[in-house]
Length: 297
View 1 (cartoon, rainbow, N blue to C red):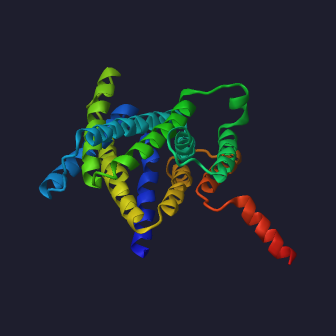
View 2: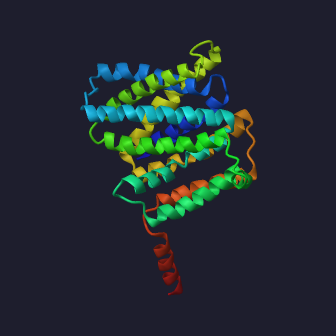
View 3: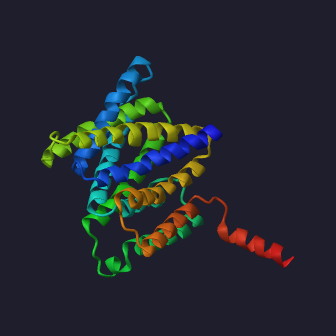
C-alpha cells in the first residue's frame, strides 16, 4: 500500500508539471499535443513488441481503442490551448470537472445512473466554477476561447474515461496504450498540418520540454497511476487526482509567477469539494440525520 501511495503521489506530481510546461509557450498548443503522443509512442511501442505484450484485438475493440486515442488527443490539444490562452490554474481546475461530465453521460447512456450525492456535488462544483472564473463572465455570457476549451477538455476526458473503461475489459493496458497513442499521433499530425502549425524549428529548450512532456507527463505519470489503481480503491485514486489542479496552481505561482486571487482560490476549493461529494457513496442526508439522533441521545 505504501508503494501504491508513493506511486500515486509521484504520478500526480508528474501530471501537475504539464500545465507549467505548456504555459511556457515554447511550441503551439496542438503540435505540443502531437509530440507528447508521438514521443510516447516511440518509447512505448518497441517495449511492447519486444516483450510480446501486444495482443491483436477484434475489429470492434480495436476501433474503440482508436476512437479513445482521437478523443484523448483532442482533450490534450484543447487543454493546451486553454492553458496558453488563460492561466494554468483556470485551465487545470476547469478540466477537473470531468467527473461531473462522466456522471451526466452515465445518466444519458448507461444503466447505472448517478445517485443523489452526484447531483448535490455537481451543483456545488458548478458554483465553484462560476466563482473561479468570475460571476461577471456568466452574467454577461462572456465565454472566451480559453474558458470554452477548458470545459471542453473535461468533456472530452469524460468520453475517454467511459469508452476506455469498456475497452480495457477485453484488452490489456499496454496494447490499449499503444493503439491509442498511434491514433492520437496520426490524428494530431493531421490537425497540426491543417492548422499550418510548424513541426520543427523550435529552440533546444522547446524540444526538451516536448520530450519531458512525453516521458514524465504521459508515460511515467500514467504507468504510476495505473499501478496505484491496481493496488488502491479506484474512488480513492480518482479523488486524489483532483489534487492535481491545486498542485498545478501552486507550481504555476511558484515557478512562472502566475497571479492567483483569493476568489480563485475559494472557487477552486469549492469546485474540488463538490467533485469530492460526487465520489461519496453513502447518502449524505441520511448520515446527517443519524448523527443528529446520536447527539440527541
